[in-house]
Amino acid sequence: MTLGDYIREQCHHVDDALNRWVPAESEPPETIHRAMRYSLFAGGKRVRPILCIAAGHAVGGEVPGLVDAACTLEMIHTYSLIHDDLPALDNDDLRRGRPTCHKAFGEAMAILAGDALLTLAFQTLARIETLDSEIKARLVGTLATASGTVRGMIGGQVHDLEGEGQTPTVALLETIHRAKTGALLRASLHMGAICASATDNEFNALSCYGEHVGLAFQIVDDILDIEQPSETLGKTAGKDAQQGKITFPAVYGVERSHEMAEQQRIHAHRAVEPFGERAHWLREIADLVVNRRS
Ligand code: IPE
Ligand code: IPE
Ligand code: MG
Ligand code: MG
Ligand code: MG
Image (cartoon, rainbow, N blue to C red; front, top):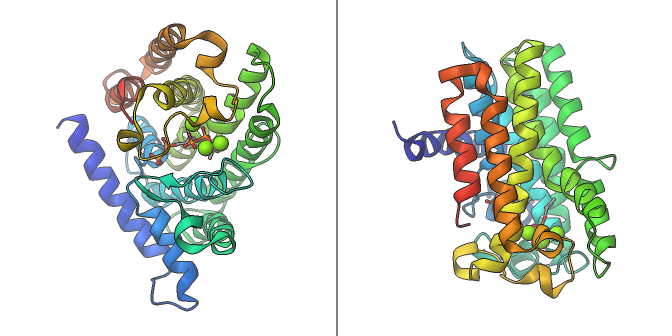
């Protein structure tokens, strides 16, 4: 099986689960369900759920509830993108190769679609029948903290917005990216580990991998914003420079940023050495994160 086959298979499971948990377009009020599904099924890479599933597989054994838990990460992530694109935030017209949610459904409905996906993520976690309550409580805590204001995604978004136009410094860059993207990516590994009842050592190794992959992911996102055209990215290219964002290339330059992503890839590989062959997919995913084109 190639990584491509593995990813296709997991994406299929994730999309199936999302389809089950997200109300149908025909369910009233139809507009909000259409808006939620429009953004969810627009062709995202599903990196976070795939990382969650691969972490569960690395720990091994039967992992109940893994795909359902994984799909809640995609709900949070998609909500964060819908809100990130709003006129009050990054003001973007293009996402996942289509008009952004607010361009297609209007600003009010896009705000509500984001709110609804956020709420649905926790409703879903609460309802997964195959997980016992202690595991569910840990998953809820992990996902909420990673999405929140203290070193979580929203906190990172605040720093990102307040950093616009400021002098790019190493300290500001670290604060922004560890929280903005890193927290949810790391939580993806944590959630897979929790579902699989990982030992403390396994949990810590996956967490360390998640930290490095998370950093690599954002470095590459920043590089691609400069190097790739909008058609490949599925989002507006050159936005970061236009908006004076604090990015890795802005602080370190493009060449050094490439080297830094490669270093993070090596650290990620090292972190999961104790898993041996069981971390096969995690290693390949780290390689893909660094060498992707979108
Ligand atoms: C884009 O995330 C925004 C960041 C957090 C860097 P992805 O690159 O995972 O976007 P999709 O889900 O594939 O559209
Ligand atoms: C967004 O970061 C991260 C989120 C928490 C949504 P960016 O603003 O860099 O994401 P893109 O480049 O628009 O996808
Ligand atoms: Mg942004
Ligand atoms: Mg943006
Ligand atoms: Mg970006």
